[in-house]
Structure formats: C-alpha cells, structure tokens
Image (cartoon, rainbow, N blue to C red; front, top):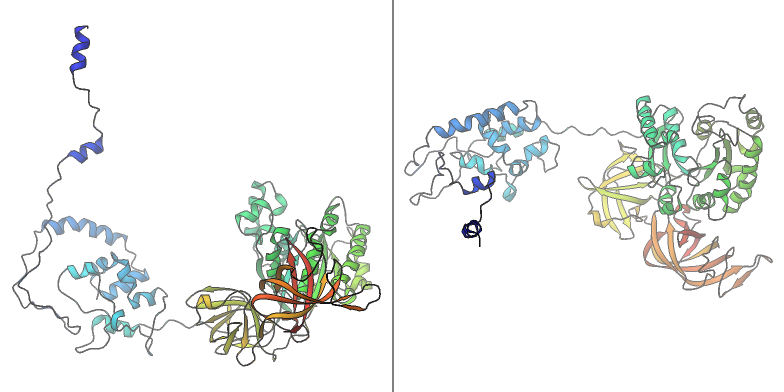
Length: 633
C-alpha cells in the first residue's frame, strides 16, 4: 500500500466548517447585566387591597434595594421608541391614559397586555363594545367580572386603585370619576320609514340573457354608481378579454362570478326614483343554481324576465330544459304578481331592432306564460331593450334605429303603454297588501351581531319596535329590540319591506324557513296537508307519480324533504271530471294529493295566505310540479 494512502486513511475525517448559527449555539451564554427579579419575602404579612387608598405604605421591612440604574438606562431607548410611535389622537391611547391616571409609563405597560386591557368596560365603550351600563350612562362592573389591572403594572411597584370599583368604602378613585364623566354612546337615529311604495324586483331568465348587465346599467343610468367605478370595471373587463361584461360587474361582485361570467348568488342592490323605492334581486340563470334563484324570487313582487333576441339564444332558453320556462313558472309559483318581459340584445348584428324577431318571441311566450298562470292581458308587459347601450331603459330608443316601437306604445299593444322600463316600473302598484292583517315574515337568513338579527320580508301585517313576536314552528316568544329596513333604522315596517329584526334570541333558536308571527295570532305548523298539484315535468327515470314518491318541497323560504302520502283524485283531461283514488299520475296531470314532511313546516291554505299557500316540488335538479295548499291535516 502506498505510504501516502495509508497515512490518509489513519487521519480523522475532516470536519465541515461551522455555520454561523452553530457557532452561536456552541458559544457560552452571555452573562446578563440586568438584575434578577425580586424574590419572595417569607416574613411578609398578608396583603389587603383597599380601593379607597390614596397611597401604599408597607407594614414590613422595606423591599430589597432598587436595581442598578443601568437597567432603566437600557430600557429608556425602547420607551422612547414607543413614545414616538404613539398617536395622541388614537381613542385607545386616550382611554388607556385616562385609566392610568395620566401616568404614561403605566399606560404603556397596560398596552402590552391587550387581553386584560380589553376586559376593561371603559375600553369596550370607547371602541364601540357592548356591556352593562348604569342609568347615568357610565360603565358598571361588579363581582367576579371586576377588571383587574395588568400583571405588568402590578409588578411595577405599589398597588393602585382600579379604574372603576363596584362600591366599597373610601373615596372615589380617579378612574371612577373619569368613568362617571364619560358621555353615553350616541343613540342611533330612527325614522318612520320612507313613505314611497317599496317593490322587490327579481331579474330572471336563461343563462347569458343579460340579467346582470341590465340590473347594473339600471343602477348606473339612475346615478347609483359613479363614473369612476364604471371605468374601473371597464379596465378589469378588458383584462379578462370580456369588454361587454363591465356593467355586470356591478352586481357580480365575487371572483368566481367575474371569472366565469355566471351569477352564482342572488345579487342585491337598492334603487330609488321620485315615485318608488326598489330592491333589485339579480338571480342566477344557470340550472345548477336554481335553489338560489328560488330564494331570491320568493322575496319578489315583480319579475323581469330577460330574453335574448340573438339568433339561437332565445330558442336554447325556451326549449324543454331551458331556464326561461322554469324561471317563469317558478316566478308565478313563488308569488310574483306582475311580469315584465324585456327582449334584450335587440341591437345585436343578427337582430338590428327587427320587428319580425320581436313579434316572433312575443308570439311564442304568450301561450306559455298563460299556462304558467299569468293573466297575460293584465299581468304581463313586453318591452324591447338593449341592456348594454341603455336603449328603452331610462330613455326611449332612437326612432331612426327602431321606428316601429313608438307606434306600438301609442296603441297599447301587449298591455304596454309606457315604452321605457323604468317608467313602466313606476306605474306598477301592488294592491293586496294588508297592514292590518296578522304579521307574517318568512325567515330568509339570520346572523349574530350583538344579538340575533333575523332577515326577512314582511308579507302581511305591521311590525314595530318593542312588539312581542312568536317564532313558528318552535313557538319561542321574544321582543323586537330594533328594526332596520334597507340599511336604515326604522320604528316600524309595513308589508313589502325587507327588514332586519334585532331580538334577544340564540342563533340556534331560529332558522331559514321559520316564520315570525304576531303573538296571539300565530301561523299554523303541520307535517301533513292536502294540496292541488300540476305535474309539469317528471324525470325520465321516474315517469310515474305515485304514493311514496319523495322529492324536495319549496314553500316561501322553507326547503324540506316531502313524501306523497296518498293520491286523492286526478282530473280527466278530456271529460274534465275527477277520478277518485288513482294508482298513479303522469306528466301533465292535475291531481289532488296528501303530502307529508318529516318536520313541522309553517304553511297556510292558499285562500287564507297566498304566500304561505303556494309551493314547488323539485327532483333531480329540475322543477317537476307546482301546487297550492287546500287544507292542513
């Protein structure tokens, strides 16, 4: 073996150079120049806290001598840095300094323990928190909830009186006096509500018909959206290579909707004219989101059915399986009292405001809407528009572009005597609203904000602040603490108003589909009822409707599983006579049957309360039947 290799093999392996962090780890710990904490004094007597004391006098031997001056000198730069970072106008700093009695050092130490600081009722009040108050508006603390000063402040030296003491001997402390001087929080200004009639409008129709663009342009043309916002949306739409989507971005606010160009959730916005107030509900058009559309349409008084006049687009939405048919049927079932059909995209190069195309669409829609239950000559209006350019929305279309429309308006063709959409809306009115009837508010949603807040639409009756109410079907009774309508605090709400009811309930005690009622005039909850059904479109996999058929029930804001308990009768289409106890029914049949739900739902016979008496049945992603309740069993 070569001598060099033998020598190399006997040497220890070379060590890798140490990293900086390894050197630091191996280095001996530096000796701290700071003094150690003061130890316990075994000879000390017990300490009794006197909240009225003005100073602290030790009764035992003096504590160990103060640490060397080096520590404060080292801490001084840190304190100076904190002093520089403090904003003297910050509300939190002001109230902390007040609690510390003007001692800035103590206030800084208190800020180092935010948990203890936030438990102080004065801090909660300054930051808008809620807590119990005395009659004079000053914050009160008592018993085990008494706020204690932060540990940092306790270690700093002698004990000081707490900022707010719950009674006791001795004089009032400095913090206590400051709490009493603090003015109460300003009360929210409530109003009697707007005297103008309020209408809920839902935009419905097939996907890509232009619903979001129309609702967005309606807000823009009425000055509810400023030009700078529109320019921002224009730039964003160009970046996505979708220049015509910028108006839809007003209503489609989340990233998923903007990326796909499809509305998912029901968009909500408020609009006001000199004559009326409106809440705009932009419903999704895709068949996957029909349950969301139902939630929006259940709140609506007026429906705007948006039809695309572009070649092949109307046909794809109107043929079997298209959302034009399903949306129109659901709108009538869910309580829409008036329908405006807007034939959109009339400015498209394939249409060019052609009267022939408009007449073709109107001719196909009329018989279908009649089969849905609409009185076409009274409840339905037709208007040709361009949602992108704004023609016939706020101002009439240029006669040079569409010469035939002004003549049809003058004649009152298709029950349309006003040529612009907004003018037509201002002329509509809902006649059957009864403020003296029993209160009925189907619960759409609820959330927690210093108490439970229930969202819904007043279908009948009047609700006022302080009224006792009962939540059905659970029967829980509570009181209205406050009311908000269209983001404005009000004293009372009338039929048609969208309200937020603040009450003292647990969040789990109310759910979507419950109904707020007048205490003493409650609605009825049941698990079985007799109804009249029209079978619209049964699934191919289940073509027979029999006893035991299970599907989903949609009634007002409630969704529940439902089972057919019994078929009572079926109407013979030829003889118009009823056949008792049929074994099954097919698509297109009109039947009377009994339905059963697993848990109680709040409903009513259609003749007594229309909004609680009409419903839809859905199965395998589509609406299979519409019906009305005849009797509760």
